Amino acid sequence: MNWGTELWDQYDNLSAHTQKGIEFLDKYGNFVKERCAIELEYAGKLRRLVKNYQPKRKEEDEYQYTSCKAFRQLLQELGDFAGQREVVAENLQSNVVRELHLLAKELREERKQHLNEGAKQMAVLNSAIGSLDRARRAYERAARESERALEAFQRADADLNLSRAEVEKQKANMKLRSQACEDAKHEYADQLRKTNEAQRQHYEQRLPHVFKQLQDLDEKRIKHIKNFMLSSVEVERKVFPIIKQCLDGMEHAANSINEKEDTQLVIDRYKSGFVPPEDFPFEEQRAGADTTDAAAAHNHHAQLTVRGTVSGNRIKKRGGLLSIFSSNKNNMSTDGKEDYSDLPPNQKKKKLQAKVHELNKQVAQEQAAMEGLMKMKGVYETNPTLGDPMTVEGQLNECCDKLKKLRAQLRKFEELLAEANSQVCAAPLNPAARTNGAAPPPQHPTSIGSNSGSLSRSASESSVSTGTGAGAGGGSVCGAGGRAAGGSPESGLGGELAAAHAEANGDHDNDHESDFDYYYEPDLQPLGYCKALYPFEANGTGSTMRMECGERLLVLETDAGDGWTRVRRQLTREEGFVPTTYIATTLYADAAH
Image (cartoon, rainbow, N blue to C red; front, side, top):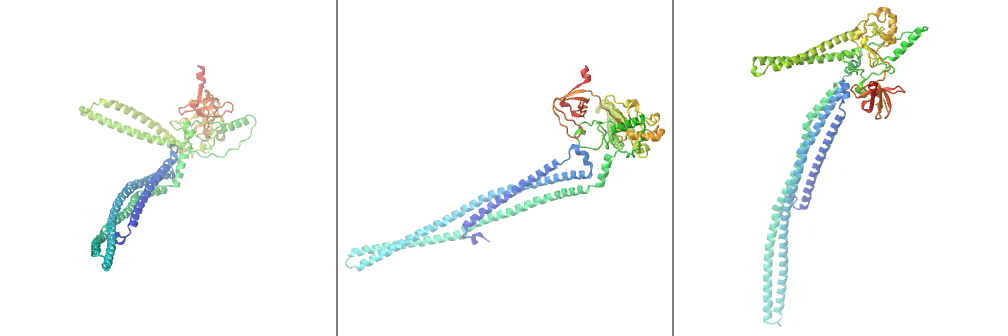
């Protein structure tokens, strides 16, 4: 298969074909280039998708479930998958697109050179053909003139009226024309030989050589297109193992989802450790004071809250910034008590276990640091040239003091943990807990808050036996100072049920130690007043309160460092939190000064 022999007369078609071939090469190069752009765009959108669905900091607690962990792993694998698409785009750009551009430029230059050479050979052949045509026309003209001269001589020689001189003149002209015809004939024959030789060389050597070069150029183009396609496939194939690992990771993440484990996590997260209350007892209607006492107990029960179940009227615990904007509804403590006494028993136990574990780690670290310092001091004492032992003494003292503090904290939290364990273990067996408890013992004097006017008692204080509590009162529901004692938001115990149970059991529960916290919060006394500098819209969670610019509000609690102040609207007595920077506050103590 040779273009020079098979297509010897298709110069123009071969020129157009090679041009179309290079244009097709450019077209394939543009295809690969646009594919690289699509791959990069795809990878970029995948990465943006992964970034948008990454868990936020406020959602970290929700990502302890297996389904959420699997989703996070899937996002990570998808990010790696996007990275492989970027690798494909980069390799195609460097190995295919750039090489295609250089090859197309090189083929254009080679084709131009070959076509110029072919045009030059065509010009040589056309020049020879032109010379042959001129020689042929000269020979034809000389032959005609020779023939006319011969006819004129013959006529003159036959005419007897002409002189001898005239006849000789015609004879000489005839010979001259015959000689010119012979010369033109020889020149034509010579030019014909040269032209035929040039034509044979043109169609047998020169033009086939040009066509062979064009054929090699076109085959080179086709071969490189094949190689580029194979390179594209190889680029894809190289990332397949990693993509397969990404897909296997996604599959493993999906298979790691365990609905039973998630169910247990929900139980561990939200379990309070309390037992459900028994049925409400029938209240016998009595005359006079008894009815009043029952109504008071009922009103008191309505004011109390059971944490995680029922909310009482107008009782709000300050949760700070996180409780305002967070969607976390895990019933965990928000007031930051060090001993976690505000939490339900089960949650308190978990928090204490985590704290003990953390302290154990810190103690181990400090012990290791102390051992290192002791070894260093021993080396310095053995070889004073290495350093002064006294330089380590200060660090040792600091380490010892820190270790003592950590051990004291560890002992404290271990005692709290042991107490919490005993409470959690004893709760299901405690008949008082099953029936929402006996009447609570009198409050410890130190548990009465001076600022908020609330009455609370922590779990550690509730273990103190009071001896003469509810038994002497014959089932009274009032505690120290005449205030009604009942279940706190943490304990889930109702004051009315506690009073009924105490009334039914008499003095049986006098020596019983309460394992729960009791919380009661009447209306807070204003600490001052404030004026709204800017308008503020509540976020709809129930913790914040809307206010208008210039509005005057009562201050119930000052900013505790979280940027929020608790206020009350004087007419509607609506309470809530507003940004501290949005108000100008004047406290009554400051006004008195």
